[in-house]
Each structure stands twice: as C-alpha cells, then as structure tokens.
Length: 137
Image (cartoon, rainbow, N blue to C red; front, side, top):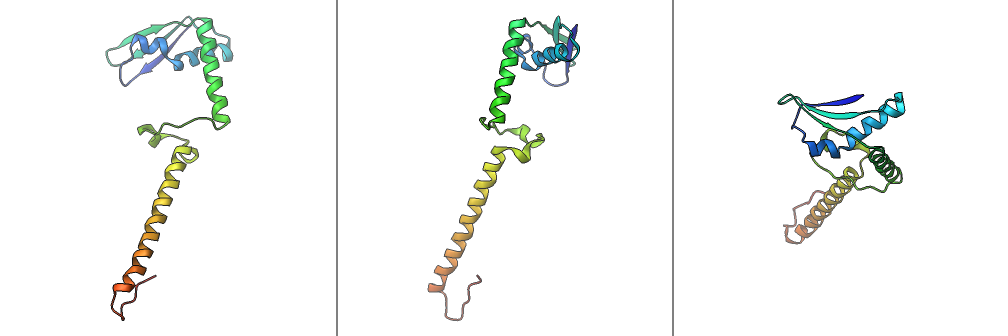
C-alpha cells in the first residue's frame, strides 16, 4: 500500500519526506485502523507534478510513535511551550492557548499601568491647576 499526501504549496524534498512525522503518522494510522502495511509514503507536489517517495522501517515507526506519545503526555501534563507565529491566527485552540493567555495578561497589566499613570497624572495636575479646575475622576 502507498499513502500519498498531495501538496499544493511549497514543493517538498526527499529529505522532507524522509523526516516527515506526518507521513509516519499516516502509516501508523493505516496499520492500526485497517491493518494495512504501508510499503511507501509519498509527498506529491502538485506544482511540477512530482512525487517524492519515502519508506519507513518498523523501528522508525516505533520512534515516531514514542515521539507522538511523549508530546501528548507533555501536553496533557501542561509541560509544553507554545511557539506563537503566523499560524496561530488559524488555530482552533487559540482560546485555550497559554501563549495567548500570557499575551492577554501582559495587555491587562499594561492597561492597568496606563490607567494608574493617568490617575496619578490627574492628581499631580491638581497641584498646578487653577482653583476652579476640576480633574475628572
């Protein structure tokens, strides 16, 4: 059996295919779900209509499985650091993301500091303001 992942964007290289965790996961899923033994994995680059074919040994698939399980355990335990980037804008987990929460906390602190500075500034202007001047509070 051959699994083909069609790529519409940037063309993938042989090295990309050989190191792809995504292709390894596809092979593991096909074996676990349907009992298929995958003989080849391929990225088919639509730009240029070129396929890049790769294979996985049982050892490589076991390494991929361990990597996935380790990452899953770390995520479940809260032991992971998100890496905010452009793709965060499209992520289904934005509302749960610790990086987004950290950004929100920083923004709240900045807003609080600005408010405190404004209220401090208003109080200090009373000393220099004419007697009939009333600062809004």
